[in-house]
Length: 218
Ligand SMILES: [Zn+2]
Image (cartoon, rainbow, N blue to C red):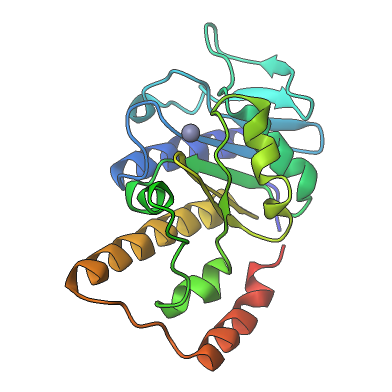
């Protein structure tokens, strides 16, 4: 795949940040997005910037140890940078990470309902399994630790009482995953209010999971 220039990545991060807010996947200054620039550098959204105001020049350039290499005056990386770097360490195939606070998906974790993968074909096919990580205080190293094992074999994880994180080979892939995740949680919520949702047959579920395996791989 052709590597994007720094400028192209910055444009995509800003645009994706706006989409995340417009889709109701995060509000205010919540959530953060990063992308690999190359083997030495990552671009990550800064903390404290109102997300609808995110500009292409705002993402901070950091190295894989978390040191800031370049930043617009007054901006510093998101306090959740540690989680992003942990993912890049564990997943050489991943080039972009989106963390947001999608309300329907996050609400499941508040009441201890596992993410519903067994009801809508494209969920298991496109997202695979979606585990829920134990609660960890946002902005502390515990957050990265909470997803360390799970991210090795999953592209989408719910963060207990906090939000969700998705990864992809591109920013678009990570965005589609988090949109799909929230849409499935929303649909499940509606179904729950109407009656008891019925899962797809086991054989169908395994087939969907297998069919999507190639696509979900890095
Ligand atoms: Zn968060």
